[in-house]
Image 1: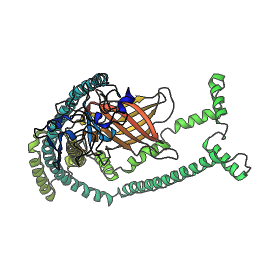
Image 2: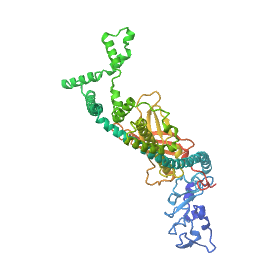
Image 3: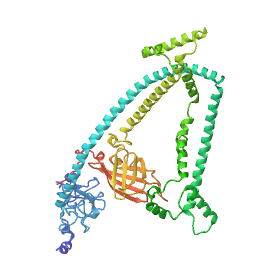
Image 4: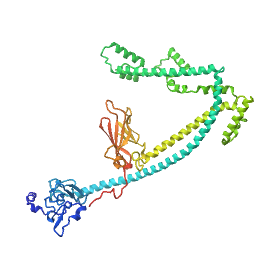
Length: 554
């Protein structure tokens, strides 16, 4: 039957529906004119109405053959009733192949392709409904992320404003305390000069000499430690890489000497040594008593507890060298020579804070005049005020710097919240800053902390090391995607991770799509040490509206 149909002459095949292959937007232009003449859509010429869809190309733009393959520059529209319409090139019409875009089979002659639009349409709508449900739920979560960003913006703005006011207050307080400190320290400086020229000069000179000697010893100690580390690395490399069968006695003696000095087992017998250690019995379990020499060593260790250990030298020497020996000397002298001030005559203790500056100024003036006439002696209260004033100033400066730092950080965070290259134009990603997502693959746990770092950790019960797979670098770097577009936020780049052995630095491309939860679903190593994570996030779920809905033509 099909062969008979194909064997029909061309006039028998010419009776094709004039609107076959015409898209709904152009249907009005394919109606039979009263004059019998039809104008090509580009307006270039008029042809008889019967020439439309007659399998002969007459119009330069190919508009007279929407339902055949006669014009190579034309297109064919599949109605696909029950599903979504589609457009294909006219060259694929009547080629004997059933195009997947045309589920109704209209791209071929009747009977060639089965109309499967009903089943395909139903399956498509189920999938689409599920996706729309996910998108709708995710969009609600996304809106809560946006609300969080706006709250965070208000919080940071209030913090910046309050910090600015607090900075102004603290700057005035620091200026006031600095005047007091400088005033009290001027007397301390004079007292120090007097001590340096007096009988206490040997003690001061000795302190300074000890400090200089400690600094020199620390410098040389660090040099020796660095050289020891370098030498140890060289000998470790030699120990692990030399050939025991190659009888070079110099190398052998160097390796044996290093193993003895470093307390290492002979290379190649570590496993045997470990097994022997696991099976060994402690001296206490075996009933072996300590020898006299061992007890003596313990006694020596007990008597030397106050001496500095290597760890103390490493961590505590800097703090010791930063000691203000001048202030220490002054404080000691004040403690020895100065009797405690009487609270009864400490007038400043009875004054409100607002009157303290005026009291200090009046007091200084009075004491200076009394000193001129030889009436006033040592200023008992001032001797202790010197260190107190400096401490108060230091505390005030630290508090001021903290407020300044907090204000700066708040301003930086404020600028990133609604930045298209930061947390998105609507701030939808701010809520997820630092949130960590994990996937347990068995041998490893893969983790990515958004906008921070990706890691590869040993799996549960597995030994091993944690490797950095990269730190957050950017959103989608493709030049075809502009910042702010939905596709821009579908990829994150993490690079500059731990370098692989004989390979590149580890890196991750995180590919995301709309979902109701923030999660990693798959991990793949596409190239050596180059990973791809796929996951979901509600931050990618845009709200559903008429523009985003796909039109279904039934």
